[in-house]
Amino acid sequence: MTYQTNCTLPEEILEQIAEEGMDAIPEMIRLLVNEAMRLQREQHLGAAHYERTDDRRDYANGYKPKTVKTRVGEIQFAVPQVRQGDFYPDALEKGLRSERALTLAMAEMYVQGVSTRKVAAITEQLCGTGVSSMQVSRAAQQLDEVLAAWRNRPIGEIVYLYLDARYEKVRRGGQIQDAAILMAAGIGKDGKRRVLGVSVALSEAEQHWRLFFESLVERGLQGVQLIISDDHHGLRKARQAVFTGTPWQRCQFHLQQNASQYVPRKYMQAEVAADIRAVFNAPDRSQAEQYLHHLVEKYAQTASDLAEWMEVSIPEGLTIYEFPDSHRRRIRTSNLLERLSQELKRRTRVIRIFPNEVSCLRLVSAILMEVSEDWETGRAYLSFNSI
Image 1 (cartoon, rainbow, N blue to C red):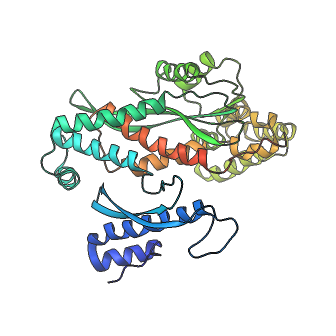
Image 2 (image 1 turned 180 degrees about the vertical axis):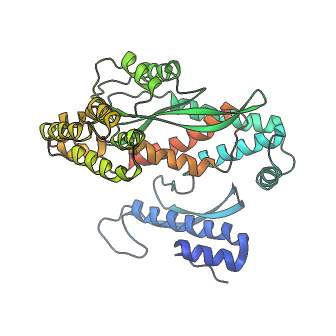
């Protein structure tokens, strides 16, 4: 079969795998990455292949072969060259940190004898049968230095601070336990998102969140005008202690989920959800508070626990009315971190159980570093120009 350079649609990839099996994957990766590098060279040159334009900055100068070890074996790529100046396409290198971290995590399982037969078989294909603890340790040290430098980099001024946690299974003392992945992301004055920090802790207890927050402050975090998060007890206590007086927006999405615990009848859930959305979608705070007052009266008799909860909790989701209308959709929930958590889940599920906390932190850091770099080199998430 002749491979096509435009084989990028999932349906086409699935058809090719179905026809040729898993052996088709390395060739598809080669073609897709080569195409991405070629397009990056065109962008660097300011002109397409054979295009005549006054904006051209340089000329193409063929390709140089480079063999890279990947999770699907060795692949030889064609790295585009230019006649003058420095040019190296990052399409080839992008994501290698997270791929190496994944390989190391699986290799550690294999070396320590804690993996399933399936994971051991995959690791054999990735790393060969001669994987030793010394080899893993040496490779891990090199990667850990890069990731530690990223986790400890200076932060500076952040306008909106997002906080959340997710859990991964980790082996501790021969037992499998849930480890809390504490995450912080933010939006700076340039309007761009960035991952600010990550930590692996025993739980979401106040002491762990507090240590995490203090590390952010030590790295120069300042200027926070609003914190967006869920209402976890440990997070709340640590936030009040470290970021005293900083306005807090309770995630509206989580608030709606929390409300279901106080709805006495299942058939009422849809109506309650619609009522809460009406409060959150009010044009201003005054109107939102009027809607809320009406709801408290509405449910005072039929669902008294819900009415009491609404009166206390819903106002915590209305802080956004103190901020620009153009920003409210982005800061009303912690969905920014929810999507990040989903990406972590997608990329870590192959591991299932990490052999230790260090391995877990390594892979999570590599993935978040990759995402953060994409955010910081991409378009602005918010605009502060009109404020």
